[in-house]
Amino acid sequence: MSGFDTILYPADGSEGAGVALEKVRDLAETYDATVHVLHVVDTLHPAFGLGEDPNRESSPGMVGDPQGADTPMGGDRESPKEIRAEAEEYGENVVKDAVGRLPDIDTHGVVRSGTPHKIVLEYADANDIDLIVMGTHGRTGLERYLIGSLTEKVVRASDVPVLTVPVADAA
Image (cartoon, rainbow, N blue to C red):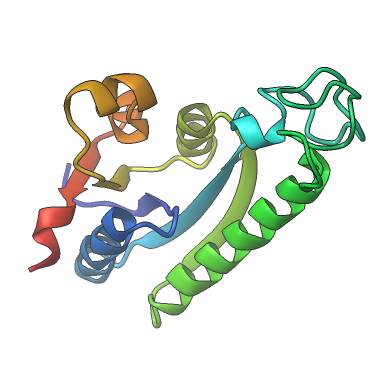
């Protein structure tokens, strides 16, 4: 491959993603590539009701809420719908910030909802992405096993090259 025309940068606002953004900038400038900045709102996150429809007004039987009120964990917390709206707003801000840090580079920013690794892979396929650049959070051992690694899932399933950038590259 002589270069990259399209680069996908999954942005989550983390330190690892921020370090990867510098690599994205270098690659985009080197290859005159278009950068797609993607933030995925994880709809399977427990705050949305353990994978239930986040647009549903109430979710009876959720943890700590015997009355089935509009709260993901009981008490007077926000409903899954309100939490999703906040998560989407956060994602829009993350994308806007990343795009703003890539001046003079052709960029496309988007926020999607779903299972993060699946959305990243589907987006890459649908947009003829040549390279995915992702930061790593450096989780190891039990924490990595229990939480899982978005980057690892993408690396294992991607049909296109994935450049992983460890947080340690922040030097």
